[in-house]
Length: 392
Image 1 (cartoon, helix red, strand yellow):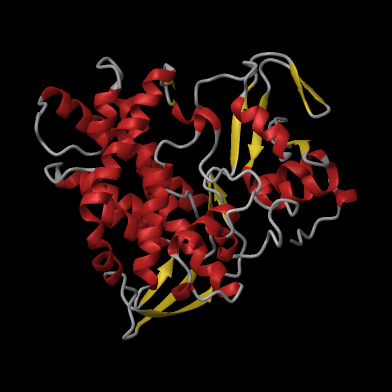
Image 2: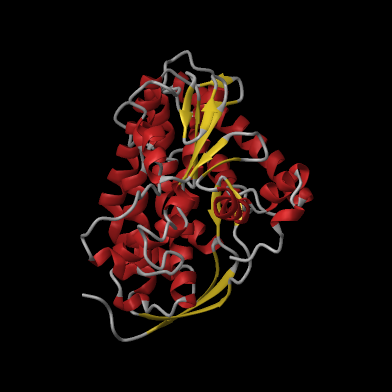
């Protein structure tokens, strides 16, 4: 991938600016020029793209790394301990998995609501949100809060896109949402309703200690809300875009294979950081307590030794049960995303609904990805023309 920047012209400040502007382009260049273990320019953390070293970092049999996930860093501190984090993840996964199992047949209707022509990836996020709406907030939630969450999805707050003015407006809306969800937390604590159908907020409430500040509960809920909606829409969007670029007819490909391949090329957890607790060595680099190590799944998934024609979208590579390289689309080790299986299942079902009984045409999508936590595809338009043939 061309970056437009020559190695000899990179200064420390220039590298940091480049990394902030185009982190994927930077790590591709750094791995090519410096090898599979290198320092990131923004905070000096070590980036690991060597398969053996990556597995050592993620699975950490020597106790070199902190066991508390930084996913739960919220304003006011870290929501812990680890047992609480695990309980939250388990409760969230159960809630979303049950919803998917009970309402899977609604997905074709959700896709139909997108119309014949839709703008992606926003259409993917909207479809995921519509399908999950009652699992994210139960029907008896105050309408004002439900409308506010719809606004969050519609205005792209989940991906923090746009220029400085747009991001300022998004931060203001996010702060407003945190206050509104915290208010709902206090209301549910004051008036618990046993036996009512639970939602994601109930799952977080039930898994956190009762003295957890309402604002912290709200922030964790919103992190889970974000990671339940945006990645699903983006995985489907990337599959649609990549299939067009590489001449793959998605109507002839198992949706599960297409989703796996989409997640290989654009993993949700593309960079996974771990704080260092004990002095040790990774590759040729000596690490000290207080430093940080990041495993780069994006680079690991594009390693030609393990993934032939690694930059190509090839769903058929999943037909072969033979050995592959590390595959970590939702993280790995003790910090793999608790909802990974649900997200992958929903993305598979959503892609199947989009491709079933339709001829697909993609227009646009030639820009660079936007990276703000997750990798967001460039905007494109999808024309979905119904045909008489449907999958059986």
